[in-house]
Length: 247
Ligand code: NAP
Image 1 (cartoon, helix red, strand yellow):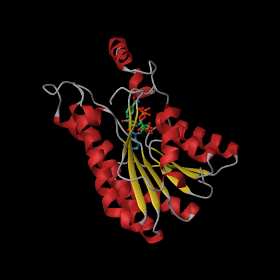
Image 2 (cartoon, helix red, strand yellow):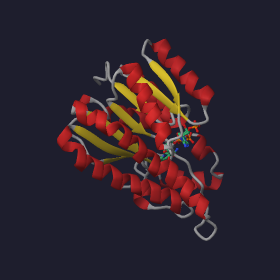
Image 3 (cartoon, rainbow, N blue to C red):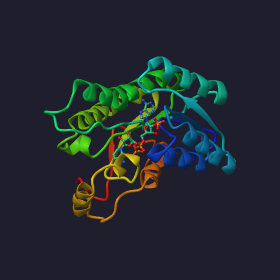
């Protein structure tokens, strides 16, 4: 896919979709900066796996909520690899509950990681990408950011916010050769969905036309395409990866 020599930052890459994305981008030839906040062992294992492939990876701890920590991750990427060509804003959390029970903290925690985290990273890489007049940014949204979901008002608001952020950044940075897109995964097998009750999983399965849950690799494959040369005429789009759940 033409990622040879490109440098990619993937947030929350110590496990789940972020880890699968880091591995896929490395497989396509990119140098990868593996960001994590608490999954240290997973981050180092991912880096080791990448190094075994013969690609380059570095591990950078950093909380996406903190602009200072985010700037430090970007600086480390530049020191190590010279620039940043690709940014994948994958880090995300849930604090699911009905709106009547949702606390201000539930709201703020989710918005801070899922939406402000992406804003922080985009802000930190923009100058670099503008200067080189190229860059590929992918934000990991969700189908519930498009369709909404009972019990996830905070999460859905953050994921819908990411779509607005994606389209605005796409318009603002297009004149500088930078593309910004979002992916909207449906139900993907990971720690995030593991904790859902079986009844909810069955309900999802009933509504998925392709009759299977997605894998982190299903998402990683689409992200790898969206950050590649093959996707250079695509910007401001939201690509659903959901087995047909929302159409
Ligand atoms: P996951 O296994 O729970 O992974 C979440 C990731 O986010 C972890 O790597 C975690 O890193 C990182 N993260 C959380 N808070 C962070 C912070 N403050 N700073 C840096 N990283 C942080 O879930 P997943 O399914 O892979 O989710 C990845 C993304 O896909 C999320 O944005 C999620 O909303 C989105 N998504 C998932 C699904 C699904 O069905 N699984 C569907 C639609 C969208 P640490 O462990 O290091 O803290």
